[in-house]
Image (cartoon, rainbow, N blue to C red; front, side, top):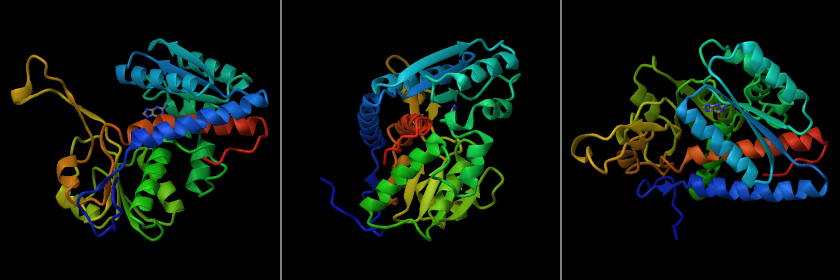
Length: 315
Ligand code: GUN
């Protein structure tokens, strides 16, 4: 049992259990799919993996496994890294027309010979469960969140921020939020989501000056830079909500090298020092990571409802 805390209490922080929140959402997605099945609707997700990136392979396998666990129809496509862009485009056009498929996910990064912007733009916007199509990017950028399909990782991070706000008995409106990282997958869409919730948003990046000072001014910090343990406790205002999107694999080193030693997964936040001051913080692993897949299932469900003119579930 955790006692309720005010934001002025920094220690111990509320550790946001993304795994539990994700499992909860996956359960609800499965229940909703059961309701849709009574109407003869089965949400369908197609995943497309191009090339041999081992991390991508793991992510795509997890996505199609989750889809099956939710009772969705799931199809996986694996293409060689040698394929022509036109072959990938042809597959997407076929999936755009396929009535069994409501969501299409092309795992990024793509091989250098393939233009990701062109590929994302070729996916039918209503099947774009990654939220990367220009129309969905535009809807999110203009604050039209209810009509957009939203990118999964930022949308999942947002749900964890809401959990933290409930736990800390606070609200987002008017708060200053700093995002570290300006990628189109996380940083930029995260800024749009926080802006839509009336935060004052700063996007910091590799060229930002005085980064620690910028971060110190934030009530909400989202780290998405891919720099292991970069954000340290002394960068964080007491009571801040700290969301760590980083997943960095550190090689086994020093005394634990050798037999039985394993590489370690760490985030962009130095959890040990950050948790001495944060009001709420996500762990790595078990924080934002699991939410991405849950949000992909939510988006697929939403896409299936819209395709069939059925009211969207309130999730
Ligand atoms: N690569 C890293 N994150 C993502 C994501 O959310 N979707 C896709 N398609 N590729 C990714």
